[in-house]
Length: 386
Image (cartoon, rainbow, N blue to C red):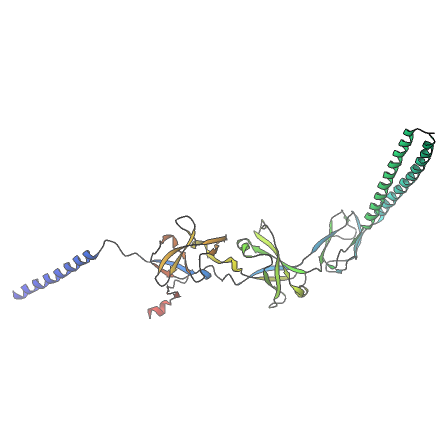
């Protein structure tokens, strides 16, 4: 009986302790639950979109002449002969093709005869005017007759000038039957053959002048604001791997190609570097990232603040809390956006999960490999477990 009574007393004491603990816990609880730390994917701002923007960007290109001229006859006719082919070097003034001169010569002779006839009419008109002028002084002819002869003389002078101009034009056209190189260079392409009938202005050859060499390449639409005319580049010919030639961007097209959505650009080779490459060669153009381009983030990192402005969430790995930072954005690409200001390269930016956060929210930052980030460093889970 005594043992049974002791057991009941002991049970009552334990029950009383449990109830007391529950009452104390209830008294200390303010009715709110501890906030849940949400896992978020983070990356440093300088590494969020892959390689740092200061690294070299490579673009494929082709070596071209700085000045490429389409050569054509200024008159039409049948090609009698051609003296050059693609790849031949020419000097300024060299005859590279000729038209059949028969028709041009006959036309020049016809206009020469018309000019001679007009000159003869002018001589006769001058003589008639001189005679009438002498008779008019003696009042043997009327004043109106002299005026009429003066008008005939002026007309004869005009007809003679027109005939001489037509004759000179025909002589020039006869000379145009010879196509000459306007400057030193290389024949890049040929579009005519002997015996072919060509029209005036029809392209016959393409001349690559010796005024310099450059590389034609294309810039992507998503990054066009990173590049500017005069920006230094490095050019590496495909045929000589490892050889780097200095150059600069000479021009960038003002509008994008409607099909490829790229901007045509040309990089000129500095100094004597142009002599080291040949026309038509393939080359790589390396362009350092522009310092003004800032940072680049995936579109998933971009959020809107309460005013509708662009913002991102930044995590402090020490406190493991998120805060919203307003940013200034630049150009948008297919999968990313340039950030001009508002971020530092070493900031940990939330790439996914930002739409669930609020200022001061506790988070569990992890990197792309699902490794926890703490104190600005990525922890090794296996090492942490040990």
